[in-house]
Length: 108
Image 1 (cartoon, one colour):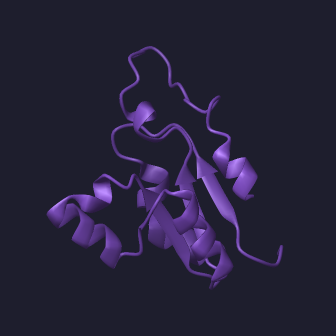
Image 2 (tube, one colour):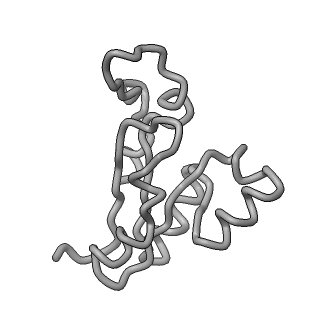
Image 3 (cartoon, one colour):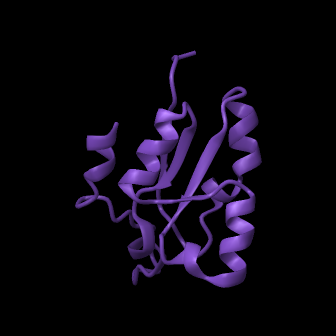
């Protein structure tokens, strides 16, 4: 078991990000450390959705919010391809939109 907080990254996003939605499983699978799933800042401004997501531990996917959670020794769960992954146009194969997503590497 590696000490310190972890960053869990998943792709592809799809319409519903199942890897992050399975939050309770992630928390129990990787010990007692709290896992913070992330959502686009715009999603966390929607009235009802924001309330529900924040109640189950979501934080916005900004660099500042991720760093705050890591500094509190909380794990963070991120979907690397974000909103772009939700609206991919290729129905024949799953695509991950990660080539331009380098910010998480800097944080790690």
